[in-house]
Amino acid sequence: QVQLVESGGGSVQAGGSLRLACAASGYTYSSVSMGWFRQAPKKEREGVAAIWTGGGTIYYADSVKGRFTISQDNAKNTLYLQMNSLKPDDTAMYYCAADTDGRSLGGGRWSDQYAYNYWGQGTQVTVSS
Image (cartoon, rainbow, N blue to C red; front, side, top):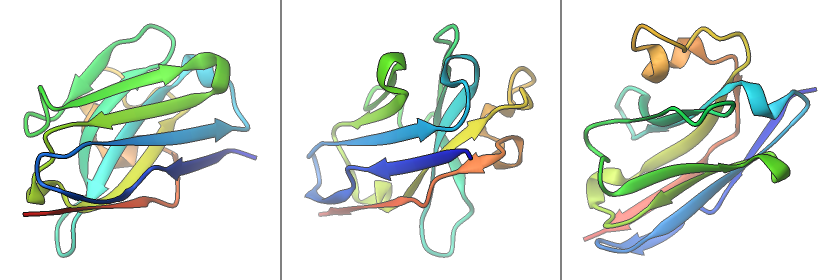
């Protein structure tokens, strides 16, 4: 059974940092695409960052480039999102997602939520000004 469990969310002031973690189990972690998405109230879910765990290819949304870093620890089957210089606009529920079918690869689909077939329960990030 595939499981994704996020942790590390919380409340910080603008300019602060948080590190999210996503512990994965139930599939071969080292050969899938993994992504972080976020959804603010009344907004569409958007892709934040993604990584191909087998080769390290990384993608970022323009809004987080230079501030967020996606990384992984294959030995621990864990995905991370280091978030620095946080802004109030980063406030959202953050979700970890896995694409075990390869649908997010190529064609710019890394940020397409429908390309991912497994999701975590989410962790809340709140940034105050």
